[in-house]
Length: 86
Image (cartoon, rainbow, N blue to C red; front, side, top):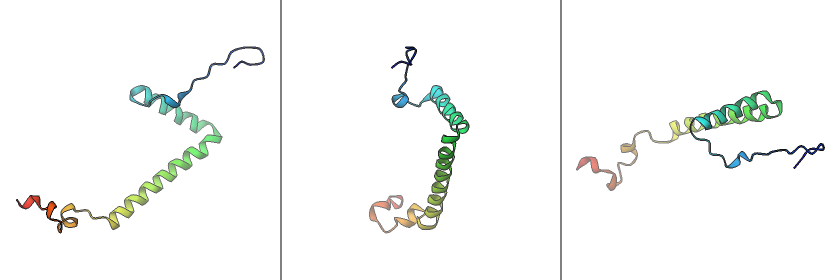
């Protein structure tokens, strides 16, 4: 690939780069900076963040109201769960 004045353009495919360690932290930080300063991406980034926070809060709210908090109370009727009586 080249520009009209025949200057070659180098492209980097970052899809296969693992986000791990300090280098990964820097890459995530740069993605956040780009998401903040580019108006076209900002809406989607903050919308995704808000949606994730709302979904997580909703899941926590649901689990606290509908799921058992005590393992022994929930599984007390199962014989294989009564090992603490042995």
